[in-house]
Amino acid sequence: MRNLVLLPEALVVGTAVVVILVGRFGWLPRAARLYLPQATAVIVLVALGIELWAGATLSTYFGGALIQDRFALFAKAAALVTAAVALAATDWTSEDSLHLGLAMALLAVFGAMVASSAGDLLGLWAGLELAGAAGVVLVSLRRPDLGLRLLVVGGLASALLLAGLAFLYANVGNADLGAIRAWLVGREATIVLAIPVLLLLSGLAVRAGVAPFHVGSLPVGLGASPLGAGLIIGLVAMVAAIVALKLVAALLPVPEVFAPYSQVVAGVAMVGGGLAALAVRSPRPRMAYLAVSQAGWIAAGLSTHFRAGIAGSLFLLGAFAVAATCGPAVLGRAEGGEPAIHGFGTVRPVRAAGLALAMLSLAGAPPLAGFFGELTVASALAQSGNYALIGLGVLGSVLGIAATLGTLRAMFIQSPIEESRRGAAAALPAVTTFSTAGAVAFCAVVAGYGVFGFPIMGLATQGAEALGLR
Image (cartoon, rainbow, N blue to C red; front, side, top):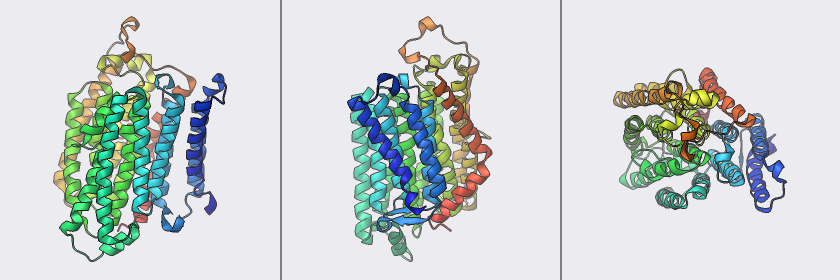
């Protein structure tokens, strides 16, 4: 079974390469290409099954560079579930390239899997950069100018990360995460160590689009295709959070160098995201700002530097990834402001239900997965006595729920606009059996994540234990 642990990664990256070659050289007939999304989604589900079966085997590879533990199992399973649902729910008639859309989504998931299993600093950086590069490609297909902007923002984030990693390596003399943690035991926090950690966390915040750094990547996601927006807002941010979780675990002996920064970013993101979501009316920007607010909760869990807080962040990360990645895909081409979704519940009821669940989960509305994740993080914050951050988080969630109610009113109470008045920006998603099944699956995953929250939280706690948290 140990030899099958890396099979899911091989399936994902192998499928991505095959899809690109099929699109480039036209190996399949035109009629057969229409079934590529279904076939790709099935392969991702097969990879998920193998991961759940063989991934429970605890092992290391390549001299400890790749580690298969409970944390990697949870994070990789969440990424694969997100990818399978997103590929199924996407309206492929609204995408700019079928083959590149499928391939880039798979490569972003592969980046998440690499970062989840990374045992050293190089693996964390490689996984994050691969996911970011996949997002750049999808954005460039529709808006080359925005793709260039995202490339510049990613370059800035990468420069900050590399500078921080270089400083950290120079201090410790070892790139292994376990060795870094062992070296820090018994040492005091110094400015020499605080500077590289600040650079690292700043680079991750830029990559994740967390406020106040969302001004770089968020406008790019709003101008991308539905799947491209999902990658930028959801999957890339998920990989950045995975890297942050593993770095915080390595820096646990000196929490003073990262906890204050995490608290500031968390507070700004939670309240700022909620206020911005309330200020805008268009569904995709509102969803993006709700994701910013929930990313603040994940950052708040990092600041606790205890197992309960990290486990809560990991649990919430799974819910965040599914909702933030698949929400834009469910929305589809209805991107022309609030009038585009007037009566959406009447003309596209399944997709309207999925969009409502995505936004409510990102806003932290009970009893969905986002609420239980935020509640777990709030409990950890209360144990550490950080009631001010809890108050900011509750305020951000209330603002987000109020904003979501406005979108629900437009979808389920307003009358649909006349078909003759619909432009390209207000076009409805195409109705196919596969996309409808994908939207139903998305609703089931979002609702089921909350229903089965207790056992999933148990798995997240095991993932935090695997990082060595007490």
